[in-house]
Image (cartoon, rainbow, N blue to C red):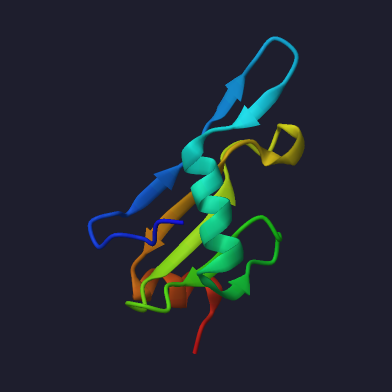
Length: 94
């Protein structure tokens, strides 16, 4: 698993369509790994579709969500950097 780099602000996964299946691309798999094994979950919004995480190394906030709520499973994952002020406002952090 590659940790988040300082210059990264958005990781956007994609779905790869094959003849009889759909799978996640490498960026999606990296996002899943970061969320499951590295980032610290801070909060979930009231809809349950958006989750706020914090990077334990540099304290940056990251929002985790899926690209297309109309698809089963929500589509491909997205991990987006949020300014501290944005995270405080959106997630009502103290």
